[in-house]
Structure formats: structure tokens, C-alpha cells
Length: 306
Image 1 (cartoon, rainbow, N blue to C red):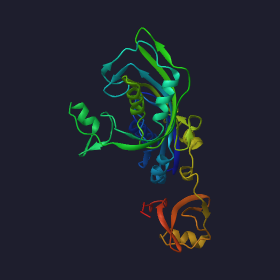
Image 2: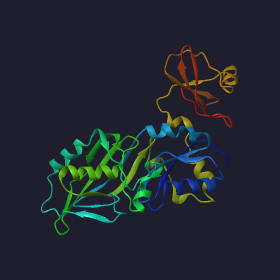
Image 3: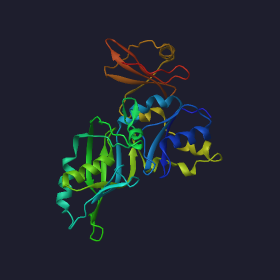
Image 4: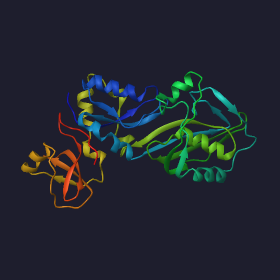
């Protein structure tokens, strides 16, 4: 089966994002399959899968941001910043934080922030993944990075457990690509002066898709794959919701197939070029002409710098 498009998948807990790609590739007998943003094995939710020519749209999908719901637990911390890791700190709470204090901490973590990636993450330092250092018991200086948190708010009253000395906070967070929600949870604890951990997480939206749009990976089998995928497959232009689209004439289509610049009756910075209703290329304005930035042509597509 040769397909070009975006398949919004629901990834259950217990499988890696790479495992999802492998399963989709095997069931569809396709080589060009990718995903637009890793979900840890213990995190479930929306994972957009790019098929065929749509693999070139992965950067655009990632730039659309993500929304999560989850839970922060205050009172202890782990080496992985989630419940998969070994506990490394505990400070029993004698009394719960007031809801106003929790909200104030979350507001401090809203906007443009600086994060230090977790040691158990795929960020590369000196050519090695941070989790490789962590698994070998090695330490290395982690580069800080800028992230944008558009919203970080509680979704229910927090729950205090006097016996364990912990307080659980349900939240919703909408963030830019590259934001670590685990670290957001830990940083909230730091602002409050106590250890913290991300105790549950679900990605409810990614790349413009929500849970309602997804195909449950558990329903994808050798028998159901063709029909299920076709029912959920979205066109490549779904990765570019604000991109103006231009229908090509037959003569223009012949030029585009050869990467020729075009004169178009518009002055917008970028346009999507469609042939018979299918997005075939993204062109950017350079002087008086529009020239190729991304090509989705079968067997010809290459990504170019504008």
C-alpha cells in the first residue's frame, strides 16, 4: 500500500513511538513512515504518523504545538522525573499547598521559559543521548533550551494525602515543540520548595489533531489496516492549516515538476501548490518569483532551504 498523508494515531501506554512507526510500517508494507514528536512509553495520546511524501511535513506538524492533561505529585522526586524511575528525594508535606499558591507557581511557568532537559531524554550531548549517560551512571552538563508554555492550569482541586505526605494536582498544558512536561512538573515543585514528579500524562492534541481524530493503535491489525487507515488518513495540507493554496494550471504543473520558479497573482510569503486537489509543493516568494521550499512530488520530492 502506497499512501501519502497523515495518520493521527492513539498511542497506548506500554509502547514507544518508534514501536508505533515500526508497526504501521509493517502492516502497510511501507518504508517511508515517521512520527511528529516522541511520546514516552508510559504516556498515551495523540501521535501523528506521516506516511510517504508527508514525512517531509513532520517539521510543520511539530510546530503546531501540543496539549496535554496530566498529574503532578508533590512530595517526592525520581531520577526520570516520572514514575518509571527510582525515587531520589522525598519531603513529606505536613499540610497541603493552597490552591492559590499552586496556581501562582503554574503562572510563573507560563510564557517563554528555560528548561534543562531530563537526564533520561533523547537530547544529544557530544554525540550521545542523555539517557545513555544516565544508564551508565555518568553525569554530563545538560544544555538549557527555550520553550513556550501557552497555558498551564489546574483542571480540578488538588488532592492531599496526609498519610503519604503528598499532594496531587491535575493539570492541562498547551506547549510548543521541545517542551518537557516532566520537567515542567519538577520545576513547579522547585518553585514551591518541594520535590515533585509527573505522575500521569496524556497528550490530547498534537499537530492540529485531537483524540477524537485518532485511530487506536490497538485496533490496527493486518486485517483492519487498509480500511482503518484510509478512514482516518488526512491530506498533507493538514500540516499547514494557515497556508494559502493555489490550484495549478496544466502548464504550471509541468513547470513545478521541474522545480521551475513561478509568477503568481499573490504577494504572500509562502503558498501551497495543488494539482488535482492534492498538495504537491510549497513555494516561497523570492523577488518576483515563487521558488520551491518543499516538494511532495512522488519519487522527486526534496526539501530545500528557502
